[in-house]
Image (cartoon, rainbow, N blue to C red; front, side, top):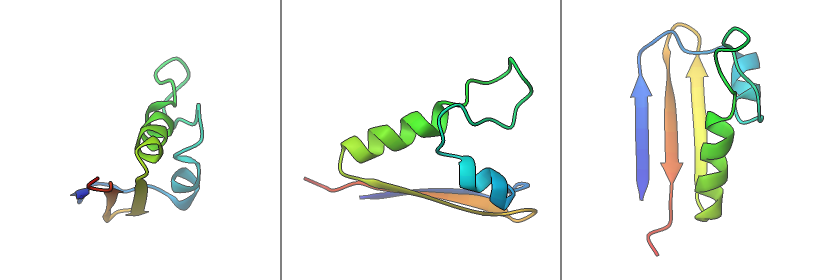
Length: 71
């Protein structure tokens, strides 16, 4: 099964995209984020033998695709 979520928002830089799955990585000011959300999401998807892929371009939005096996 595949779940795709995409938007036409501000997108993110290559630097942000490169670090998005790194534990404690955040673009928020100190004290306003743990930087664990995407790292935990990736762990959950991988524990279910799935894959998660994020593509983004600044000024053009982003796309998150999660692929999970059916059985």
